[in-house]
Each structure stands twice: as C-alpha cells, then as structure tokens.
Image: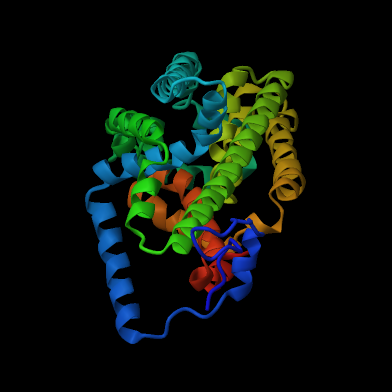
Length: 365
C-alpha cells in the first residue's frame, strides 16, 4: 500500500508532515496495461493536435498558467501584508503590463535604428571580412530568397524575428485576462478537487503534493527569471562598456535568449558578432561584444545556475533540444521560450508523483 505523506490515517489522527521525497522512493514502472498505454498516447496526440490547430487560444492560456506560477511568490507576499487578493492581482498585472509597455517604448527607437542599418550591413561585412565573402554571399542569397526575391529590400529581419509570434501578440489581452482571474482564484481549483476526493487521507495527500509541486515550479521559474535578468544586466553593461551602445536593447535581448538553452546563446553570439562588426571599428575589437556575452553566459550557465538549481532540476540536453525544435515548430518563438519551462514543470510533477517517477528519471540530466 502506498505510504501517505502524513503519518495520520484518520480524521482524528494528528497530521505529522514527513519528507515529500519519501514518495519518490516508491517509484515503480509505468503501467504495462496496453489499453491504458494506447489511450494515453491517443490523448496526448489529440491534445497536441488541438494545441497546434487552436494555437491562438491555447498559447495564451499556457502562458498565463506559467506566469501564474512565476508570480505566485509575489502574491503570497502581498497576502502576508493583508492586501486583498483582487487588489494584489491587479497590482501584479499592472506591474507586468507597465514593464512590457515601458520596455517596448524604450526598445522601439534603438531597434528601429539598428533595423535601418541592416540592408547595408552585408556590404560592410563583406568589406571587413573579405576572406569570408563566399559564405556571406551564400547567406545573402538565402535571405534574399526568404524575402520573396525582392532585390532592393535587403533582408527583412522583422519578418524573421516575428515569425510565429502573431499568436502571442494577438492573444496578449487574453493572456493578461486569464492571468488576472487565475491570480484571483488562488487555491479554488485545489479546493474543488479535494472536495470530490472521498478519503480524508487522500485529501491531505493531494494538498501536500499540489503545494510541493507548486513550490518547486515557482522556485524554478523565479530562479531562472532572476538569473536571466542578471545576465541581461551584465550583457547590457558589457555592451555599453565596449562602445556598442543601446545597453537596454542588448540586455533585453540577452534576457529573452537565455530562456532558450543551447540554441539561445548560440544565436546571441552570432548576433553580437554581427552587430560588433557593424558598429565597432577595428576587426578584432569588433569581436569583443560576442566574447563578453559568451563569457557571461558560461559563468551563468555552467557555474551559477547549476549551483542554485542543483541536480534535481537538471534536464536531459537531448530532450531539451528536441523540445525546443518541437515547440518552435508548434508555436514559433513563444513556443521555443516556453519549451524548457514546460519540460521542467513536467519533470517536477513526475518527480513528486510516484507512478510517474520513471518518466521523471528519464527526463533528468
């Protein structure tokens, strides 16, 4: 019989919490019932199909749930200060919305300026890196084909960067609306679930499991977000020190790219090589922004973040790459950003539910 996370067994027993990790010690194999396996596979396939077809609806909902877990510690803190939950949720939403609008206004000018310099950027690169003229010409032809053969248009960077993000942009209001009501609801869904569970010991087990899962997921998301913010701050400062300018633009870019492990830093290095050659005189000095960005990423990705998250939150790098590719294909850039957090959330849930421990071990790095 599976051990409860509390030592008490009845309504009159004193509930003594035990280590939640005790549950993981009883990890067993996944069910071998062929009918259940087939039905589970069909359910997953149907869910993924619905997520692809109804991306404009599903993506904002998923993003709202992830943001709810991210902002849960802030909501707890406001509740400790006896702030009413609706007012606390409104405060969090207004802060998020103000941050998005403020960053958008701050980035609009620098982004437009750099976008205007891109058409002649290829020529400048060819002059400074004449020994790479053939690869650059191949890249230019490739970008020319992406733009539909318009010879005088350069390469449309905005079309590339915004590809796949229309679902997020069109669903921004939906995301904020759902997030607001999720923050207001608090533990309503948990309470309703507990009410329909017949056995009292199972009720306590459900509450403890849900709280532990929520706590772990929130800790993971908050830690990753704080580390990405520090990476953005360090990158913006480094770009300002090298004379590249626009530190807010490069800091926000590094912050976003750091949500996409492996592929994000590679893209960041390529971008900083390009803008360094475009904006800094001196061939070798122009590589300094990319070198500093890579150095910052190595410190964060190889030392600081693993030390903070420990082994428990590590993921299989092969599955990370597959997840990035799959969700980018499904939802574009927002899918790539959400891919790793969703994979980490799945692992945390599997680690805390005994029948799914085998899957959690498979996802582990």
